[in-house]
Image (cartoon, rainbow, N blue to C red):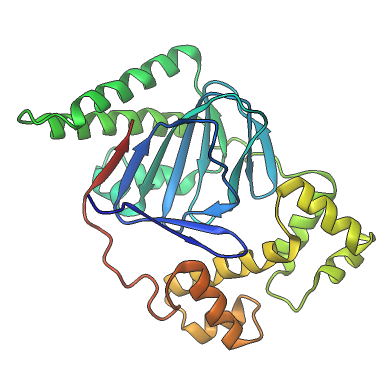
Length: 294
């Protein structure tokens, strides 16, 4: 079986892209560490089961509780912090726009629900978690069976499972988005989001916040596990990727995202995303396949 994920590492962060339209897995682990990363084209739905972990997304951090549902949009930077050696268990679904569109009907538009999503954290009650786990178990038990129709029934259970998540998202429509990060880190992230395409430096950010550069760098690294300047470059690259997907030329994406050195932009983009800006996104990745790790 071919490798499903293509993980591309660089010095700044990790991009995890998927070759197919959806995947679901449920590992239990105490060994793996997750740094900051994004998914270029897939939504992530994380349903937390157990462990002692914090979830970090775009500067906001929350300790997860049984039944929490974390919703991550494409190109949102996020990570998990393991707080001790206890076992960490969750169910993760990655699903693409094309898969959501294929599953949608005139009455049930999954794609619209995901596009309208504003809340990053939802929560299943004990009863809702029981139903969700039942759906997940039914899909797991059917998916790998060779009996006629088992794969079709497994896919149907996946639709039921995703429907339950989408119904919860609909209930949250109009609710406030997960509150912004507070304090120094929140102010830093807000400054970066507003000024990332401008000619700024870490010293400029520190000056704007009226603190020393060394203190700012230390506190940002302490909070995120990530260097501040690397974060700025990451945000620029993610924005450039979005521009290219939207039809911008490579040159336009370079300068509009805040890079002033074209050669450096090409090198950074290629190192991060695994292909040059010109070639990125040309590969056909719409085959209907699934990876289960249950």
